Image (cartoon, rainbow, N blue to C red; front, side, top):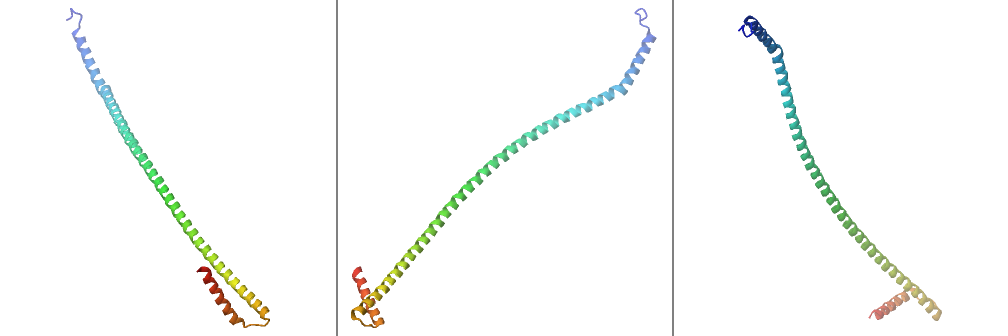
Length: 166
């Protein structure tokens, strides 16, 4: 081996040094580097898993939000429809109430007109009776029994009304 230029004791020393250096590096550098790389790999894997979970949660949350938004729209439409129905019902009730009030007012007005007509007829009869008595007193020029003549005038007026109606 010396002919090749290899010195065996130096080669053994170099090999021992190399193996010692390799052992020292393995213990103090390679293992810690592997641990750091394993931890880093685990962190990356966990981060990717967390990102996947977050993406899935976001998609789920977005789907839930869409469903809630759709439900809210449907609820809004139902509320609008209910409000419209209530407004229609209220409008109909108010129309009916106003119609009833106008019917009542019309009936009262008719009753008032009838009462006033009856009162006017009674007043005309009374005045006519007074005029007839006054005229009769002037014709006869003496005072007549007012109650007896009033009865006679009422009877004549009733007979006159019967003739007019018949």
